[in-house]
Image (cartoon, rainbow, N blue to C red):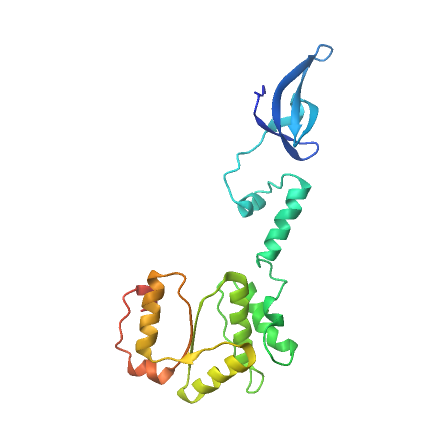
Length: 222
């Protein structure tokens, strides 16, 4: 096909893109057209048959990655690095350095299960004494590191709410105070209109049951 000055083209042999400068020449012996292509300052003369119009860049880097539009090797490495530091890879546990607790490998199994789960839901049913509280808080720290999670609500039996608050502060530096159902309702209502609103709260199952008639206007929380 014939290319015009300014066309963005893809050089299949070296897997890179460039811009048509407007200069071209025809080899009389083979009737082949060669175009001058600018590859980031490097001008190369490329046969017309080795070029094709580059796809328009309408998607973000993840869309292009899924479409295998890697561009140059350097840009491909930059993309991989961006994904890694963005926390999208499941072989990195960002919460491992959080918490003033003894390192116990089994307590990270729920974190791995959670981040590889398609639903991002998990039931932790370990035996007494294995550290279910610590496992749950590791997941919370992982969510904060990966997706900037801002809102945490712990619902526990009334006899354990103080323990939850103490453990969260002692081991993870989380200042989660006890909240009455009315306070929780106000916090949630505020979060519905302000995406930046944050809270870390502990409340009791019994307290919520007593206020079972409490209505929240957003159906997601009903």
